[in-house]
Amino acid sequence: MVLRAFALCVMTFSLSAAAAKGDPAAGKQLFEKRCAVCHSADSQIKKMAPGLKGLFRKGKMANAKKPTEANVRARIDEGGNGMPEYRNMIGQTQKDDVVAYLRTL
Image (cartoon, rainbow, N blue to C red):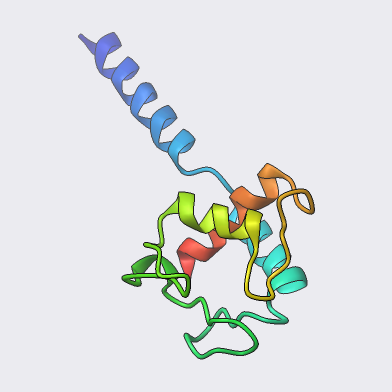
């Protein structure tokens, strides 16, 4: 019985750790280096591009798509409206980090 409870706790922790990929602190550093020139992290006011505060709580992004992780990643990869395409400019781990950071805004 105790062994089953322990196994359940380990499985639950492993699943939640796997679901929460990306390092928000590393994502913040990358955002400040590559994204903050055009995007504001602390407001929704447009600089050269939309402000990203509360991005994942918005009803839609500037491209009218729902701000899901898949849609945000697609926008990072594809760019558009003056935003460069980051598909081959940053790695998957860096994208995980940026998305994790954007979730904190």
